[in-house]
Length: 178
Image (cartoon, rainbow, N blue to C red; front, side, top):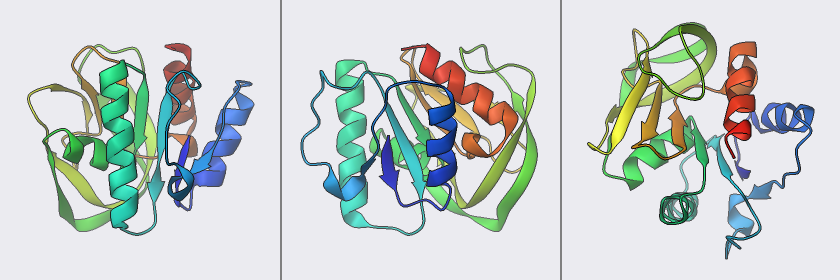
């Protein structure tokens, strides 16, 4: 897991620990060379503020994940930098989105189905995705709540899965697809 300084990082760490898997958490500014054989997947946390070095590090990890076909889950900022790195755009929302919200799952995927309750805390959203992405879920305020890169196990969630039970279930399924 890459810690990008989100206020929800501790909740994400706790959630992953509850799944009883072997994992490591690295602050983004301590990542210099990713040992591709050492990690089976990558989770990119959210963030508190913009940082150009953070953006470069996360983009490199995304490109590495695509090249090596390693599962990746980008959460909130992690989803936004995933979209940006691979040709999408983000935009500032008219109103920040905070709290529990229902989202609609629009496509078949290995993470979730139906309608799920998720916790949102963001002022920006993914506005456009490159044609390589598939929309998996949407809400009334975000067209791309969850998206997937082609048929790879590379996903972005605009929300914080670590903050709701449905989200925790999604995290468990992501970890199971290794």
